[in-house]
Length: 494
Ligand code: GLU
Image 1 (cartoon, helix red, strand yellow):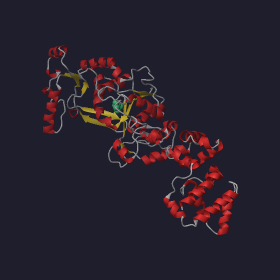
Image 2: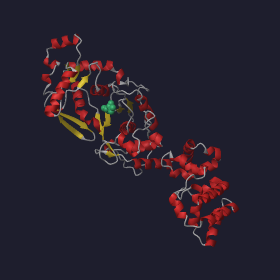
Image 3: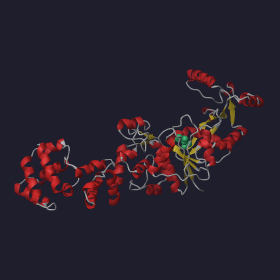
């Protein structure tokens, strides 16, 4: 059987990490099973629609490298791929649902419903329009067929509600949670068709999954409560159900509560893949490689048995197995996400690393030849955690330090710095760049001072800090004039 899965976002704003994870797991499952990954835009709720979001969804998926096989942009045989364009299809199935007596007309006004809601909430804390009270409302169950028809042809406004029979056990299957049983008395007679004649989420979603021949529905756990309603609809229509997979919640780093944008803002990590509205940074702008971002997101709720957790998208596809998706919430860990990014950068071949570095530090081309640039890339590659670190790391090759690390300065100030700088200056002047290290070594031996202390002084002069790549190599790249100049600058700091 050809597996067909879908990612079905509502264009009500930017994609959250959870949305990207849902899209990714659908993609992985499709690719693993040589199936089809469909992107369907669920824009039934036109009031909540945010215009820029559809474009944003496409751009985000493109950046992440998880491209749909069928979508608005790449229509297959199951279009249209935007729900707002599928009303003709829905009409047929709404008629069918009414004929099957799976739904009924409700003429209740918004005011009368509000009144009932307020009263019920006061009395019992909750309001449900269902088997227990539907006889008290203004709906076709309480009217003759003629009366109903007459009111409709008179142009009275109505919605269509799901007719949930009382006291039946609704049994749904979820691949992760196994059998989910719910008594129908707990459900509501959900509105399936709004007063404007268009379907609500539940109805459109089920009709589309059926008509688009979706075999497996993979979505977030927040949709689990909707599953019994969807099960009922499939049963009323007499359609085969797809398999259902509800992915675990993504929790914030403390493990208490869902990962939220507020939490991200507070703690300095993005929750969107790419920038939204020019206002919120995404992973792209933070300096993540798309492959690394995806590698980390794949671990939110799934862990492979593979020894190496650093994987390319193709490797993840290969390793992916829905059976290994966990039930419990997946804790988001930004430090881990950064570490995964660093690992991906480290594993880039030198040419790819070089073009990445040059893209973010174009100035290198003005100052160094290609061989020196390669050397710089080799020196900094393992230190790049986020791509935004690149300009900072390259700066030490381009410019003298602007600030000197305070703690480092304290450490070297135990030495007699002024004469030492004079001596290092002389040693570098008198020796070639290939030989100055040996010369410093001999000098230390003669003077009985530690080589470490001298090298630290040189490092402080060169890069303004006691940490960084191999200092001898850095000096070779920046050249004699620069290092001599930087030694004198350090002297001025004393
Ligand atoms: N449109 C729903 C959403 O925005 C899709 C739910 C589903 O996949 O069934 O998440």
